[in-house]
Amino acid sequence: MLHPDLYPHIFTRKSIRKYTGTPLSAAQIDAVRGALGGLVPLFAEERYKLVCEPENGGVLHRVYAYGEDTAGGNANIGFLLQQLDLALHGQGLGRLWFGMGKAPKDIACEPPLSYAICLKVGNAAGPLARAGAAEFDRKPIEEVVADAGLQHAFEAVRLAPSAANSQPWRFVRAGEFIHAYRKRLGLVKAALFGRMNQVDMGIALCHAVLGLAHEGVAVKGISADAPSPAPAPDGYVYTAAIQI
Ligand SMILES: Cc1cc2nc3c(=O)[nH]c(=O)nc-3n(C[C@H](O)[C@H](O)[C@H](O)COP(=O)(O)O)c2cc1C
Image (cartoon, rainbow, N blue to C red; front, side, top):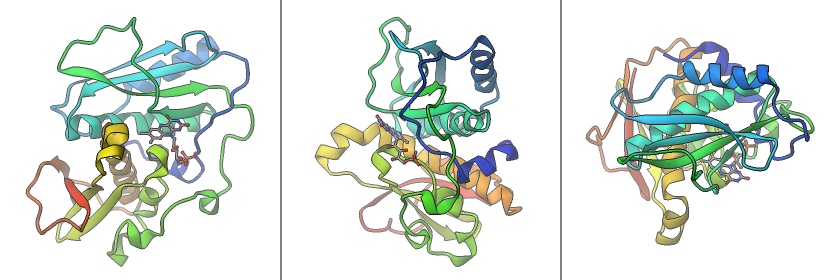
């Protein structure tokens, strides 16, 4: 479903916040635009728009993402842009998920789509890659998935990026389904991070698909709003089911 070449980048990628003063070259911009064309949506029915433009007044480019502001629409954006994050990391480019940015005024967007988030892209000033998993600040794997048989594949999910490093995901296996749950936010955090919290779930699902495929487990499909098999873990909201 996703290109297996993306998988190894999960273990070395990091957010890049310092960039050189050198703008992307024409070839680098072509590479970003080319990578956009190869992204696979999480849900075929979700409408979305991705636009790569130079950052206003800066040397970076941004890939602006638009989708419907629903759990499925936002997860779809996370799934798409995380493929781009991994692909561009593999091409030696610095990237930063940037949830605090505003919608650009010069890009047209018709409802029901609205601006969700962007990925900044540029030439990194400093090392682009981590040496290994020990350099990631993340929760233990038991808090991601309790099923020991899935923990090796889900190391890829454990290392996924999330807004404010909140890591809001939790996965529960039930037969041929792996159910994905998202941590419920309080009112204040929901106002600030609600949309990003749902984007995070798409990022986790992207890494889950890559991790499972690497272990030889084919994903037959991912469905949103499937009925939850059992009460959600305390403090979590049901999001999607991965069928294996
Ligand atoms: C949806 C999302 C939104 C984010 N927004 C911002 C942001 O506005 N500013 C920022 O500096 N980092 C932002 N980040 C980066 C996270 O802080 C970072 O992914 C997390 O701390 C884990 O670090 P790592 O990406 O280096 O592994 C965002 C990440 C995600 C996934």
